[in-house]
Image (cartoon, rainbow, N blue to C red; front, top):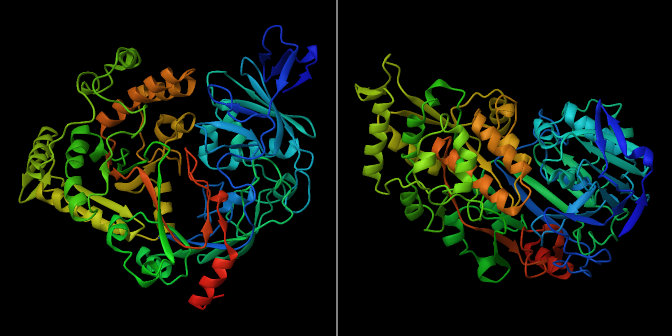
Amino acid sequence: MRFVLRSTLCCCLLIGGWASPLAAGADTVPTVHGLALYDEPALPEDFSHFPYVEPDAPKGGTMTQAAVGSSFDSTNPFIIRGTPAIGIGQIYDTLLTENADEPFSVYGLLAEGIRLDPERYWIEFDLRPEARFHDGEPVTAEDVVFSFNLLIEEGNPFYRGYYADVERVVALDPHIVRFEFSTNHSRELPLIVGQLPILPKHYWEERDFSAPTLARHPGSGPYRIASVEPGRRIVYRRDDDYWGRDLPVNVGRHNIDRLIYDYYRDRDIAWEAFKAGVMDYRIDARAATWAIGYDFPAYRDGLVKRITVPDGQPSRMQSFVFNLRRDKFQDPRVREALNLTFDFPWLNANLFYDSYHPTESYFQNSEMAAEGLPSEAELELLEPHRDELPARVFDSPVPIDHPEDLRERLRLAYDLLLEAGYEVRDGRLVDERGRPLTVEVMLFDSGMERVVQPMLRNMSRLGVQGRLRIVDINQFLNRLRSFDFDIVVGQFPQSNNPGNEQREYWTSEFAHSPQSRNLMGLESPAVDELVERIIRADSREELNTATRALDRVLLWSFITVPQYHSGETRIAVWDKFGYPEPFPKYGLDLSAWWVDTAREAELNRRLRRR
């Protein structure tokens, strides 16, 4: 730990008309190598590498993956327009980087030193003087300031919500940058500003950042863009001259020479490509394939292997999302009725080989998930919003106890629709003005069709006119941006430490922002307040209380139809990869993998490929 003497002139900085004092009586602020959300980072200042890597991992080889059901037309992932290429984040470095063996601790990457105001009104980073962009230009504090302002002003709405409490960013000298906060309520804000991708000012200041492009932009990360074939393939090459290759946070990582992403519109074709050896690595999200699909020669001969990695984070909420901007979804009884048409037990038995579990929480498989009736601490947060919230938030337990038998579910759904003012005329469910209840589920991946169709059949038994529309990825994104959909499949991943990203998921500010993750257009003062409680939580107990209260409100509002989860990641690979075991506790870090080039050469010889 180092200390930097702070001038008494800095004890009270004027920032846009407000004062940001240092902690009372603090003449020095320690310079540290890392930060943790609640406690101290686990690794000491002199750590040599992350605990889950092989520090002597060999370099070389290729990893080829499939990007399924999509295409791309841009290498700029930070804007609304265009469809960005997968994997593009690997060309950029950030100020700090996470250790996947800790719940939320960050260590210096572009930054070699960190100073955090004891009262958490500002944070400073000392940039490494050796840090370079791919074109050889140094990474400076001005690049950090430029990146922040550019992303906030012209980037995806995500950045505006994620960094909403950053008042300004200041370059104190060429290698010291300071982030100043309008409030100290968000405990995670000093850590997440370290996740900011740093862009080269000298490259972007003369270009139109808001326009899609296929240029091979310079970053400062471990990989460069090697080649781009629009809509078909993008290739990244490990940078042999990467400035940060010997940093402790990078030792044993970024080992594979070439990372290739091939694009397939159909997952079945991508599966055949994997079996033929065209793909090296795949995450197998289809239960039937995992259960019975690996009876092919390469697997029987031991050339292909399967790996199961337990999830270290809460299971992601995947669901059918209602567009609440449409009048027909305003009544929660209608949304609950449509929830009841999703027959998970039948799907699990007939399509999924009983390999999934129903998702019953937005924070599934974590201590943050609501359970039973609300606690006194939860009620304290919920009570001011009693008039706004459904009564069941207060007096009914979760998980929600809907009948498992389909006939009973549909009977309950029908009663709810009658209560909402619908009736059946000539086999169609219509409202009091005779307008039929119609719903369209929009997909860009045909793989979900087998999940959607049984739900639509169940809707038809109620008189609801349902249809499925499969569109290409560009049309899908354009319709999302203009909110032109009834129901889409959405995913809401959670970490063990949710925070600022919750604003973009659920709050009113983002209900009408194109390409925000508030897909449903939720606008609720109660939800807005609970999200702020999560962000301001100053202890694990406070965080858990706030997430459980939010979980109840979201569940009883029926804004989505929750689907299912497995609690693990299923991976299939051609047997040429090495990886350290055990895997890190809180996430799969593919950058710690490597290629056994001798095994790769033998596989290529057997497959007669280059």
